[in-house]
Length: 234
Image (tube, rainbow, N blue to C red):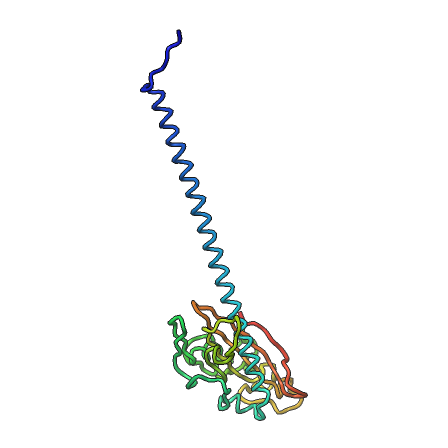
């Protein structure tokens, strides 16, 4: 007769222990897979959100540039623009000082101008503005940007549709950098000058959590208002 193993034998305890370990491993595996799925979903949602905000900020910069261009090309004396004495109808206060954005971050208009002119926050010297760089390769014909329009997007486009209303936009104006007179403070008068009668605009949009997009364009009112060039500055 075969021996019947007792229920309390060591082999039975060993099998029960193995089953418990296997069950725990399965639970841990399921938890790891679930955690990975949640993390992946969260990361993808974050990437999608940042991309959407970045694109909306770009659209805001484009809208501000086109709105400003419609005004600029109607100005008879371009030198008043280049001197900073002509402002857009779209402004939300003085041309200097801080602006607090909806997320609590602070934007200083003077810093925006300085960064555009010499890529630093503090005031620029003439030599720094004339220095040739990757972004400003024209040397003495480099634009000397002046504030023209600035304010919250919601004031510029009351019915802005799906574009975020918590974006702040700034538009700067300058002489066309393709002029060849080495005087960025005045519009060229020589008809042979390729930039005569042409104004440059730089539109910057600032969104929440550091979103920032910049576009530059040139425009003229000769033979009717029209855009001559456009680029996104990265």
